[in-house]
Image 1 (spheres, rainbow, N blue to C red):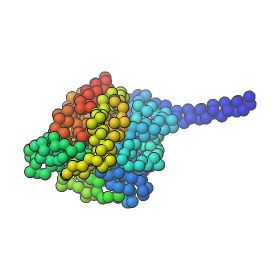
Image 2 (spheres, rainbow, N blue to C red; image 1 turned 90 degrees about the vertical axis):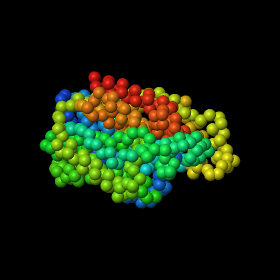
Image 3 (spheres, rainbow, N blue to C red; image 1 turned 45 degrees about the vertical axis):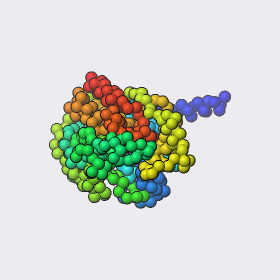
Image 4 (cartoon, rainbow, N blue to C red; image 1 turned 135 degrees about the horizontal axis):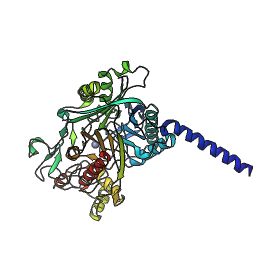
Length: 481
Ligand SMILES: [Zn+2]
């Protein structure tokens, strides 16, 4: 009996302590009409030996770090609404890991999981934290990322202080180029499945391009959400731009790509380090917009290219960051709702093809360099459920809205959402709250080519982009009130 009472007292005091901690950080409400903001960063650079390999491409095993990887977070509160956005330097980040990080945050500070948005930048010189791969998974590194993300979010909430917000958009068309061209069927290939039916190809030879310009649209918007303390010192900036990534740069070497260059350069442009005073350090963040089909152009590559783009975008953002106009009282809202989507699972014939390839029984000449990888991907995809229901979140910060999706969204879908949005400024954060692969619009699916070929990085139903667009517009209307 005494043992039971002791256990009860210990459990009760632990619970009370937890409740006090939570009350201390999160349950505390801001005054209605007063915006609070906080930001924080956690280092998630991998140790030597962690694999950067993925289903297609990858930079091998880490043995060098060009620039560190981070989880960068901003938190906002107005009255009863508190929310956090965390952008992670990873090629992708699986939903299960993000859920674990969100649960850790909830347990530590009480912030509801549906008020946390986590996304990956898609640097290809980082780790594919995706839980499914043709390579062994490094769970130790995954745990480090989840901890880092949770730490950054909790710290950003702890750093909440009275703040002002400004937002705007600058047009920067020079680094957003389509990477798919229309081709004559049969002029390129075969594709990994041995077919010559594709009518679109990624970077075909110039002589095979039917048009001088690539397919689809590109989105030139550099969207900026800038936060500063009420004494005017810079607090954090969340940028959004739509380049898939700049480069893998160098084999076995880690880099956070232009996303980090933007953050660093913006700090310099705003002289944030010298002007922070007693406040926590300034945090620059660049999120990935709608870039499933967009690259910076073939001439802009390497570490120089990433620094050049980072610096140029930071300078373009500076005017909004310096001059605003800044507002102190903006309504905050966030909604989350899942959407069920069909999976393009392989049929019996395709599964047999994959088995034959992996058994060395299927040979054609020439054979696409990714055939083996697509055969592995086919068998993995065969094990997927018939439908998936990823989370979609929409955030409102005054006249700015952020619509998020767990895919690599094509620019035309992102632009259609922006154009139909009821908000003055809207941007999309892709690879948010999971990784559900490429999201080509139906007309791009019809043409074929890389990013439509079914595998673990492209598997949603052909109409998925249309369903997601409609779903996000409905959520945008809901937060608009
Ligand atoms: Zn990619």
